[in-house]
Image (tube, rainbow, N blue to C red; front, side, top):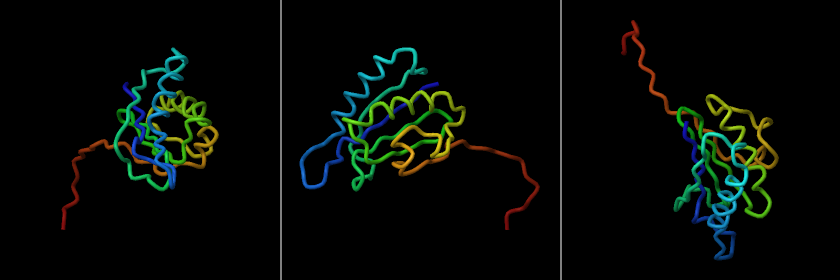
Length: 131
């Protein structure tokens, strides 16, 4: 199974030109590389121009095949790497990606902007007529 972590590169700290997404990408890639086998299923870390979380920089999304997607905000490259790495381990182990806020590590309990269910198309035969 492939997992992805996407980080906004447009987010700015209010009133500054600082874009912490680039720094966060670098730090998270290094942390995952150092974690080695403890972060399973090979996470790909990449940036994207905008995830519409502008009021809560820096935003980070976790995606996985047939898994819920999470969007976190207010992520700080200096203090939140351990929580992001812990969640990567947890997310990889979750079959459907679903967990409660109490299950998430540290700051990620309170910085969740969205949890989007997996987009799985289910086709069922039905005897109910559409009206």
